[in-house]
Image (cartoon, rainbow, N blue to C red; front, side, top):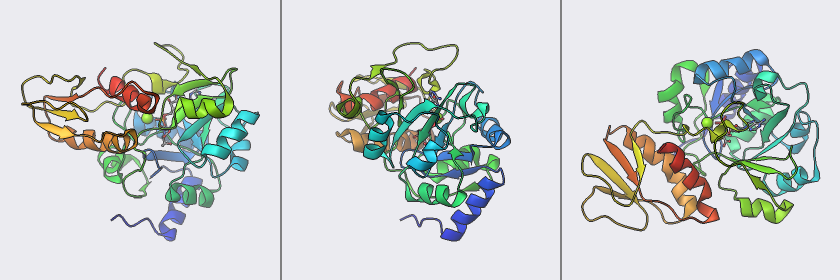
Length: 309
Ligand code: TXA
Ligand code: MG
């Protein structure tokens, strides 16, 4: 069992954020690398620590809809509906931004990605900090997102002023990102809140497809994202050699195998954690059985595709 940070530790982290420092903290999806979203200087430290190109906009975390509305220039009905239904939770809404949000947070875009995370430590930190917190996943650019505090320590330990340990994350992959700045709204990154769930509340949503090089509409769509160090292949026929086969449905007679859960929530929760652990073995490959084509598995299909590209 992980013991959560104490109130005093969260207060200290909140003070670090207010004074312009970097704090890694747990969310229900993955760990975030946070800085005061209203300070261009603080935000610059995030890009530096991650080695992230300035063309990748950051998600701004807030404690409430009220705080969200202090940075959004418009709050359409669809935002109210989705926030009411899914916040706090793994859904990021992209909306036109107000000028108090520095351009560096949004890579010069006139929109900002906003979400209220549901992890109790994240919520407490946001309340205590009293400012919106810009936070990408707390990994170096193109690497796997961290699902445990240990992953942050190993990847970015020296670069951050404080790491709050809230145990393993519950959702396990990054939030769904949807833009409400366009009509119709657009799905920019699939997540465990599915397109079908969103469409049932606000009507048709367009999907961004294919290559979006150049000005990144949503760099989460950058093909080389979320990769383990080990070569990952999606197949039911793993090659010979020092590797492992992750299956959920179709076993393989000879390969060293690891059984993955057959339901998407459990699969997502374990995916990055498993890949982080297998990376330490320095295998020749990680073969992964394809997952179902259904809506519920879309985000997992997306991450596997990127991890194998
Ligand atoms: O679950 C998550 O979303 C995690 C936790 C820490 O909240 N954060 C996360 O951040 O995954 P990051 O920076 O790794 O991914 C941010 C995603 C990218 O796909 C980015 O393009 C999109 O959000 N995004 C942010 N602001 C945007 C904007 N203004 N327009 C379009 N896409 C935006
Ligand atoms: Mg990321």
